[in-house]
Length: 415
Image (tube, rainbow, N blue to C red):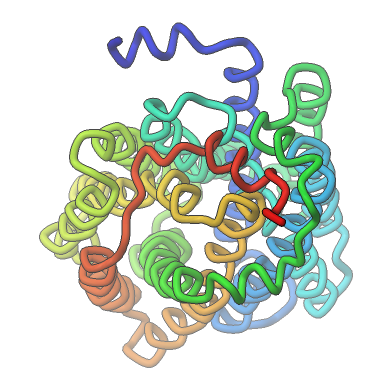
């Protein structure tokens, strides 16, 4: 069957699971990246510099692994579907609460709570989708799911360009209530993962003991996701600040160029996700990572909006091209009894280890005369090489049979 025929053959519950996971990650990223655009305004409102405001990004990222573990454990115990609804309601609520922050310290706490809720979305949503679809569509759906991240960034850039001048930074956070509406779709259209259903009567596991039993693959994935997160956040989080501080662009032009960047990210995620079904997960990640290197001069040091737009588009084709393989690669490498928890925890622990990227880039730029382009280029180049090398020598389990693994895991132990 062709790829198009495979997609047409999907059932309504399978389509709903894909949409729910994609939209959950899209709206999660939308709420996260609102902060990226609002950093200068928040700094002015509370009288702190950009390095201090970047601590808000650190607080959000650092809290995510704790949420990944808590909600991942809940997803193994109670199912992917109900936990996904709870996570979406929580991060929507904390986004709105950010608009009511009465001090910089209170905003720091609220963004950490937002990060805790955000940490649960990706792993639970990805496992729900990957366990629901046919194996031959995993690469495509992986690209779709990960494209939710730049889709959310794109929506945030459009919202910033259209509404910031009228709504102010507090009003922008109030838009974060919108993701809560997704809960109605999940409640009425999405079914529980069939793999999770097959494991419902299996003996309960102790997550920490299970992770310890799989410590080698756990350490490998955390290291890989650390490089991935340095590459992603190192090319995205400080980009609007780079445009505003170093180039003096206004909100409209900043939003437009960031939108172009995320259009490239969507193209890259979908393309390399699909391509990974042909060339393998590792080769797709390595190729996309190495494509970052020749684009860095245009992206970080281009002169004028047109050159910067071209560089932004191409850099994210490469960066999110590599990321487009992540949902399927992590789920395939995860232990079958921990697929709701393991990918999310590995991802978010990598986020934790990379969470100082924002303050590092801001401090580095300030120490070098406000040269954000140099800070962006340094992180992108180093981490692209590190990710390509680490992934090339790592494992791969393309097309592993989730259903067969679940049947084996659910079988009673031999006597």
